[in-house]
Length: 560
Ligand SMILES: O=P(O)(O)OC[C@H]1O[C@](O)(CO)[C@@H](O)[C@@H]1O
Image (tube, rainbow, N blue to C red; front, top):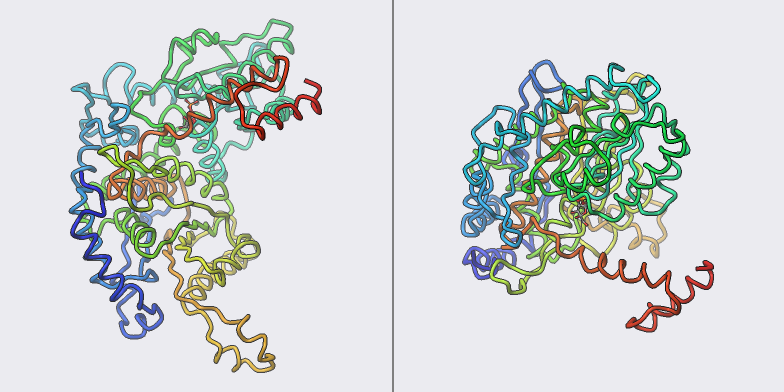
């Protein structure tokens, strides 16, 4: 594919930005077009049998508070066409090796293919082959039901009531985020810990809280070679064997979620207790795979299945909807619009939902590990900016911390606000929910309409020298996502996949490979070398004076 800036739609958008984009005033656009909300709002509906609402759940994506006209959207769609977004999407769903730097298919949609469409990689039916998607799902179902019912017992015959998932990156962030988001559905008699950091505090705190007789360890690692995970897993194994006086049965207390059977076996886990998946599942897309076992254990298989089904519904929308109606495509094109034509460097995602408090952290890996790239498909550097810095926190908390900058700072920060119409906890007669919703609506409105100097003065009693400080420029774009009911498993699945395919669309336009992650390697290699040097005499070799100086100081102060 060609670099994005060589496409004629790109130059067209540049001209359009100069003539139209720069001058759009959103509040005026709403005044002059009463149908603007309808024109730029899109909806998916999740069917009743999977959704949390008895009549199904609508999820509304209101793009109308973005700096676009109908012409802008048409031109962005043209860009997607010229960049081959549909072709690339179809290649992904056809199991082609679109991860061209690793020679791999990108086939995580198969993991949530609950309607069992034929899906093949290299001619192999990945759904029904031995060890394939359906077989692993069945293994997850059986195992989770055994653990949840107490039929699966620890080495002294007790029910397992503590689950410690040891993994990092995609083998941690998805399970953490989803179990938090679905806490309402979680088994109340299970305690979950997620240990990811190599900082010994993380595993030590989890172990301190746990009883070896009733603890199940899930060692979650696609490669089973990640230093943090293998080190934490070995520490957990040593703790388990010490605490049980060597009587503890690893087979009853340790399972592996991985693609690497030989490393799993070397660690001492019986391959019968391994839940596998394939190399075509990228780490940041792996919560749908065996890596989601902690989710299944916590919320139960039926809920996990609904989670997959909600994701599948969004996959189908992405595959079938025309580009102009295609919700993740529009989201991705808006990101391109702001990044490449307005110079925006960031993207804020603020869920107005406490259960979604880890959603932004999850999206950071999804987006930034996927599209934090410079090199395009022909091996040359992109001459345009690519993946934005994604950040966020739940609201209303974020409003009381960094929203000052979003409202009055010098940067343009395109923002997504997410709200569910219904709360799982309608306490105080829904007072909290109504206040939450009023903030969700008010923030987007305030960011758009702003406040002029005249309006500040009209409030009265404002000293003239304070007027400029109280002005809000407004015209700051937001996308409002409204789940028309509760956020249950299916709704969550659909929301995640919206962002997955938004990220896909961005990468497809930018002509980069969204599916590798070479950028994490260099630091890993250097850390290995330095780890050795900590145990050797001196302050290492071949380092710059800062690294060498700090290494020496660390050894002296730490007594190493
Ligand atoms: O599941 P693994 O193989 O332990 O990898 C963990 C994470 O590490 C990364 O490779 C980055 O270092 C991520 O892409 C991945 O999700």
